[in-house]
Structures are given as C-alpha cells and as structure tokens.
Image 1 (cartoon, helix red, strand yellow):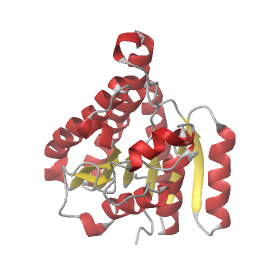
Image 2 (cartoon, one colour; image 1 turned 180 degrees about the vertical axis):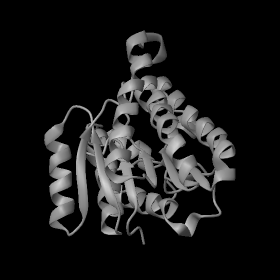
Image 3 (cartoon, rainbow, N blue to C red; image 1 turned 30 degrees about the horizontal axis):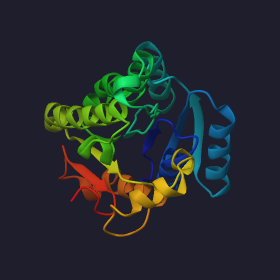
Length: 246
C-alpha cells in the first residue's frame, strides 16, 4: 500500500506514535522514527519494526525548535530524496486548572503540540510542493473539539492544530498535497494509565461505544489518510473517539 514511500512520524518512540510508525512500516513505508529525549524508546521502535520485516531509522529532533526541524527535514531529503508522508504526533500534557496554571506550562504545551506541528509542515512543505504530492496528518484530540476542564493549554493547542490543518489544506491542495487531522478520544496509553479508576470510569461513561480506544485504532485511521484511498479528502478532522464528540 505504501511501498517506496518515506514517512516521518514525530514523537514515535512510544504510545500512539509508535503504533503509527509500526502500522505505516507494516504497509511498506520506510519510517523515520522521530524522538526528542528517549533514544532507547526510539531505537526499540526501530528494532521492532525491522524484526517484523519493515524499514525504519531513528532521528532526534525537538520539534518545538524551528531551526532543528529544518535540519532534520534537510537531512531526510538529502538521504532519501523525497518525503511522502508527515505525521505530526509529538505532544505533551501539563494539566492543571487555569487559575493555577503557570505560564511555563501553558507555553511548553503550545510550543510542542502546535508550534511543533507548524515547524515540520513549514520546512517540509517546500519539498512536497516540488514533488506535487504528499500526505500530512496532524494529531489533534477530542479535547481540541469539546474542551476539557484542567486542560486549557492542551485543548487550546489541539484546537489550534485543527485550524492549522484546515488553513494549510487550502494552501497546498492545488499541488496535490492532502492535509488532514485525526482527533483521538480516550486511548489507553502510558499517558492515560496514570488516571485513577474513578476518573477512567467517568470518561468511559461519556463514550457511546463504551470502551477506551487503542493505539491500533488511531494507527489504522492514520494509515487510511496516508494512503491513496484518501486522495480526495483534505482539510478534514477524523474523530476516532468511540462517539464522544457526536
């Protein structure tokens, strides 16, 4: 399905990013596993992909660093000649009620989740324009659609990703570049494992399908948007949330 395609997945060392990298590789893509701090997690992801018969390599970059993103994209293009798929998955949370939230916590979440998405698109768009082809998939969240108490910074960043997605989709559509977003709901990951049982029960009560999502659920949605099956889809937000945002 994705044979000979080069894919860059940011924040791909663990969780949803790791599942996306594995899914794209399993369908033929050569995957650049981007990471920032955890080299071991990224190398483990690469090792698992290779062991399963896929192709991948790890590449360090803090996506919130504009210049560093430019160097990463340059290195990938110089080595591979093209980049066909960009998945902006890197993201963090620093939850807290607005009245107690520090400026640092607000800024850091926006810098990685929103500005990081801008940075990679900004540097890669020139190459995709030359190619007259490309798939860009940005990870938003149900929190960016509905909002969530205690996550003003995270919700703002993910709502911003949706606005960015729609604007960039309009700008790049004439050159055959598709730009879409995936908005996961409550997904079982290390990030959600820290929640109390009571908190998890409260969230599950809001999900019509009555279960948490899996990283595989999200990876399959990204695979669809990265493939030729989605060639006539752009500027859209695909909610993968069990019905939370109905």
